[in-house]
Length: 275
Image 1 (cartoon, rainbow, N blue to C red):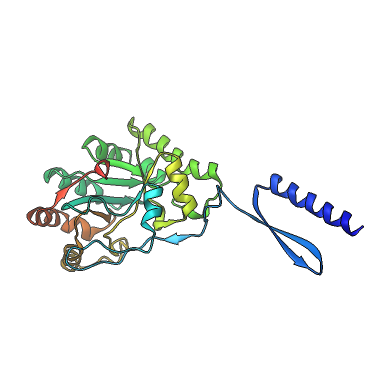
Image 2: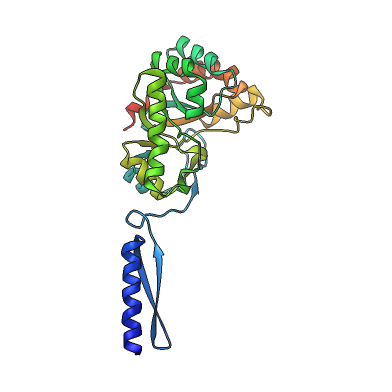
């Protein structure tokens, strides 16, 4: 009877493995009877642990540090810097909602002959179709920031993850007639190895950042002069710079920032130029 019980238990465990997408089974000895415990895994055992992107600024124009493995970034086509051997800037803006400044930002970019990348959500697209089309018409990249702005690390279902990307592409295409550029910025900078893998699988490069500051609180904006000094102090070759377009401060200092960067020998590059 004991042998029959063990065989039956093994059969049940194997059924659970095939029926529930369980890829790992641990067998623990307990009083001579094998007890079977199973753990569900996703997509070749990739980690689903949620991480928050961050960087540590370095002095004297050095590349900021990050705790994320550079091998992981390379494996899944994720970037936080571009070509660090040249004084290049990859300028990007996140657009969660419109606060009345994007048109002015576009004016400043156009006057200074600078192109940027704008990361947009579906609600932003649907509420600002003319602005979004203007971004693209003037040579800027319009890129994917998801449909609903979730933590992508929490979406382990592949089809749900894909929907966040493709529904944004469809909304953009309907609003502008253009195909969306295949760059993705994870909302709130939250990611997992699985989410990076999915993003790459669906044809996107993940775009993190190496320069940003607390600019997104519309009712608590930083002092413009202090913000400008901080940004210039943290500027570095090959940096992917993240600014929020809801920021009054960013709009006020953008023109002088661009001129100062150019005077320091920086050149503005497109995400399409990433190595």
